[in-house]
Structure formats: structure tokens, C-alpha cells
Length: 458
View 1 (cartoon, one colour):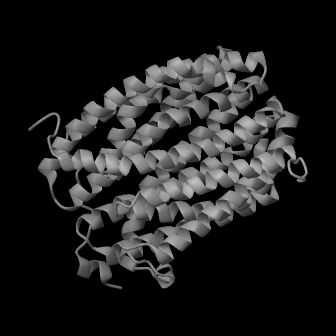
View 2 (cartoon, helix red, strand yellow):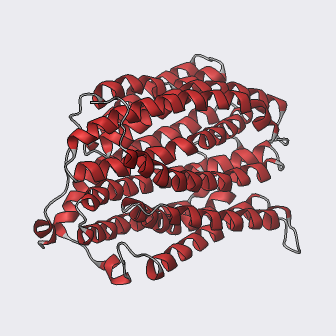
């Protein structure tokens, strides 16, 4: 068995799927980056307010990502069997769960926005700005859930370009509206961070509209119709819950981790919060290519395992490990080279915040090596290959027994901010050890599909 596969279809599929997903992620990043960069001219308090207000968006993205992951893992395996009927019902089930969560989260944020922000920081100015941002941007949550579930549905059947197109349209709307509403151009009032939130809301509505038009008019593989979104299936719903809950649970664990990160850093100083915002934006930018390729690996894995080609999947797994280790080393080096010019883009932040940002990004340049290897291995191979429960348990152990305790202890002992930040990122390296042994055991390849007749029983 080869360490590097010579199967050209693997590389062709990897590139064909990865490029649109990576570009979509890049565009999505650009939307967030545009918000941060434009708001940065309003000062540290505004940047911190938007950052803290975005933490609930992180929870939404994590939960929605869990739904997307469940759709991708199950639908991709059924796609390997060319069972489109089951795929349609899986999409409908996932959409119902996603909309329900988005609606609940919207209601909570509308009622108590400032109280939610106060969970992350005790700075009055940050709470005030974050509350304004959150009360408006939460209205976009349901639209976001619908769009992301539908994009995941298309990816599961190897249609990745539509996600890129939707995100590109959203980017144009978001940046244009940011310019008009934040700064009050062309006769619009200068609304500051409220303008940034309104721009995001309108962009999300546009995303959903474009996605629904594509589904109704241009989709040729699944041919989804509106009545399909109202259908369900008791058998597939049980499968979705059984295999989806660990994925959703893992995403929720990481959303708790991210919010706890914000709370720990948020109680240090406004400059540290600003630096975390800058560093995490750099992290998102660096994550773009890796995430696109990892998602592509997940689709290929699901399809290959669903088709029962286990020996071929082993060959792919060796190739993935080598490719992503190399990608991690390359990405870490690029982060180091771009650190200074990237921080220089934030001309409105204080010198103290810029210094903290440099320290945090240096930490990222090291941990990104581990991120590329373990994320691609644990999501792209292990989780997409069917061993969903293992990834959930592994993430839970690392977050609650390693990451958060070490960071809380470091903060309590008065360690430098970069040490606290390093504790919050240490899992990216440590998880590589677990990932290496798990991947090469090959006990994660599990076919989760049912035969067509069983799937249609109600």
C-alpha cells in the first residue's frame, strides 16, 4: 500500500471540491474582516464590542456547523450509493433542527443582549457597544442557519461552487453597506457599530434568497422542491439524531470553549480583547485553505466509505496525513511573515493592543501546524469515515480537562497574556498525538447508510 496515492481522481476531486470551499471560506472571512477593519477606526471599545457581540454568532456557527456536519457525513455516504431519496429527507431533517435552534437563540438575544455580553467582560463601554451590535445582528441567525444547511446539502453531492457564489454576493453587499452605514456615506446616517450589524443582517437575507433561487431553478443533482423541506422520515430521523448528536455535541463543546476563551481573555483588559480579535482574524484567514481541503477530504471520505472501498480509503488516509502536515508547516511560516503587515492594517488600535496582537499571532504560527494535521485527520477522515463518537469524546476531554483548566490557572496566577493565549491553543498540538494513532488504526471506517427500502419505511 502506497504512502502517497497515485489515484488521479483523488487529487482531481480534492482540488475541485477544495477550491470553491476555500474561496467561500475566504469570502466569509473577508466579510468578518471588513467589519473588524472598518469598526477599528472607531477605537478599541468598538472593536471589542463587535468581537464580544460576535461570540453568540460563534455559538450559532458551531451548532449550525454540527447540523451541517451531520448532513455532510450521512448524505455523502448515501451519495456513494446514489440514494438521492434518502439524501433529501436527511436535508429536510437537518433544516428543521437548524431553524429551531436559530429561532430560540434569536429570541434570547433580543430580550437580554447586554446581560449576555456581560458574561464575557465587565467593561461597561464594551458591554454597551456589544449589546447594540448583538440586538440587531441576532435577527440574521435564522437566515444564516437556512443558508448554511442548504450549502452543506449541495456539498454532500459534490456541488461546492454555489457556496462560493453566495458568499461572494454577500461580501459585496456587506462591504458596500458597511461603508454606507458605519460612516454615513451618500446621505445615510453614520450609525457606527449598529450600521455594521444592519449590514450583516441584510447580507444574510440576500444569501438565503440567492440560495433558495438556486435550489428552485438550477439544482440538477437533487432537484429539491419546497415540499421536500416539509417531509421527514422516522428511521432517518433516528439516524440523524444518533450520528448527528455527537457532531452537534462536539461543535457545542467548541463553542463553549470559544466563549470561555473570550471570557478568560475579556477579564484581562480591553487591549487583550482587541488583540484576541486581531489574532483570531488572522487565524481565520490562515484556516481558509486548510478548512477547504479538509472539507473536501470529508466529502471524498464519506463517498468512498459509503461505496465500501476500504482499501482505497486507507491509501487516501496516508496521503492526507502527509499533505496536511506539509500544509501546516507552510501555513505557519506564512503567518510569521505576514504578522507585522497584518497588524499594521489595524491603524485605529492602541500600541499596547498591537503588541499583544504580535505575541498572540506568534503563538498561532506554531499551533497552526497541529491544526492542519489533526483537524484534517479527525474531521476529514475519522468523523467523515463514520466514527463520530470518538471525535466528540476526544474534543470534550481536551476542552474541559486540558485547555480551560490550564488557561484559568495561568490567568489566576497572573501569567503574561500570551501564556494564557498559548494555553487556550495548546490542544492544537496535543491532539496530533491522538489523531496519529487513531487514523492509522483504521478502525474508524464505518458505513452508516441503510438500504433504500429500510430508509423509506415509516
